[in-house]
Image 1: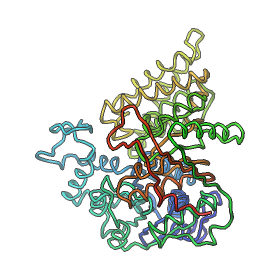
Image 2 (image 1 turned 90 degrees about the horizontal axis):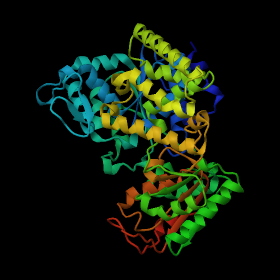
Image 3 (image 1 turned 30 degrees about the vertical axis):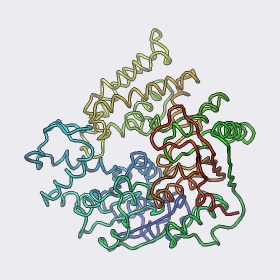
Image 4 (image 1 turned 135 degrees about the horizontal axis):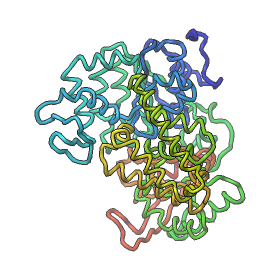
Length: 549
C-alpha cells in the first residue's frame, strides 16, 4: 500500500497540474472539462491507479466507470489494467450506460411488475415483447424504475463503489443523468465527470445542454479544466483555438502553450468530386510510398453520407490498390467482446504460447462479479476443452489452420453456449445482432486471408490494421491520425444547426496530429442523389476562415 502523498503517476508519466490534481483528489467530486488530446482517458486511468494503490478506494470497494461507447469503455478498462496490473484492475468495473442499466435489471428484475414484468430469460432487442423482450431504449428507464422502487437496491450499489467515473459526459442524456442522480445524489460516493463541451455532437440523440454546470451544482463538484493539447502540432492548435473562441471562450488555450510553426493545414478547391478524388488518391499514395506514413495513420472524414461523398475517392483508391476501410459500412468488429474472444482464442490455439491473449480469454470467460470458486471451475473446464482442441490441431491428419479455423471457432461457440456469449455484452441479448457480429468477424478474417495466407498474421491484423480509414466525424471521436482529410467543407454538407455543425467541425479537425487537408468542390455528381443532396456546392466561409497561419 502506498501513502497518498507518496504516490506518483504510474509508469512515471508526467501529468499537467490540473490532471495531477484531479487524479489525486480524495474528497470532492470533480467536473473536469478538457479538450481533444488533453489526456482525459489517461487521467482517469491514473486516478484509478491512485485510488487502488493507496487504499483510498478500500478493499473490497470498487470503482465504477460509465462510458457512452463500447470501445471507449474497453479502452479505459485496458488502460487501467496497464497502469494498475491485473489484480487491482479486477476492482475496476467499466460499462456503457446500457450495460450498467442491464446489470441492475438482471439482478433486481423481480421488482418490475405489471406491464413491465420480465421473465428470467428475457432478451434485449429492437422491439418490446410482453415479458419476453425489451428494447435498448427501455434499459435505462427500467433500471431507474428499480432504483426508485427500492432503496435497498440503491444502498447495495452505494456499498459496492467508492468512486464513479463518467466519461464523455457532454453526451449524457436527461434519462441517463436522472439515473445517476437517483443512485448517487446525497451519497458519500465521489463522482468524476470528464468531457469536452466543445465536442458536444450528440444533441440529436438527446445530449443535455449545460450538463457540466448542472452536475457541478447537484453534486457540489469542483470544476477543473485541462487546457493542454498534447496531440496536435502548433499550426493545428492555432486553428482549433480559433474555433474554441466561438464554442467556449473560457477554454481558449494560452499562447504560451502554442509555440512553434510545425504542422500543416492545406485548403484544396476542386471543380468536381472526380478531380478531388484523383488528386487526393495521388496525395495519399505519396504519403504512403515516399513519406512512409502507415495507411492506418491516415483518415478521411466526412460530416455525413460517407458512401456518397467519398464514392469517387474510394473508387480512385481501389484503382491505385491503396488499402482502405469504410468504417461506416463495417463497424469496428475488433472492439466487440465476442470477436475479441474468438481472435485471442484462435491465436492461442494455432500459435505459440501467447500469455497476453490467454489472459484476455480467461478474463472474458470469468466476469468479476462471480464468486472465486465458480471462476476457478469455469477456467478449469475451459482449460480442459482447450487442451482437447489443441491436441486435434497437433495431430498429423488434422486440417491446416487455413482451412480449419472456422470449425475451431464453431466448436468454441458451441462449447461456450448462448448464456456465456450473452454475458459478454447486453447487445448480444439480440440473437440476430450476435449472429451478425460473428458472421462479420468470419468474413473479415476471410478478407485478411485473401491478402495474407498466414492465419496468425491475419489474426494479428485486427490489432495492426494497415488501411486508410474512411469515417464520419461522429465515428472518429476519440481517435487520432497523423494526417486527416476532411471532405466537403461546404454549406450543403454542414447544413444543420450552426452550433452543432461547428462542434462537429471541431471534432473533425482535432483528430489530426500533424497534417490537415480541408477540401471543397464546386460540384458533386451522383447517379441517384439521396435526400437533401445538392449537385452545386458553395464554400462554408466560416469554417475556412478559422485557418490561421
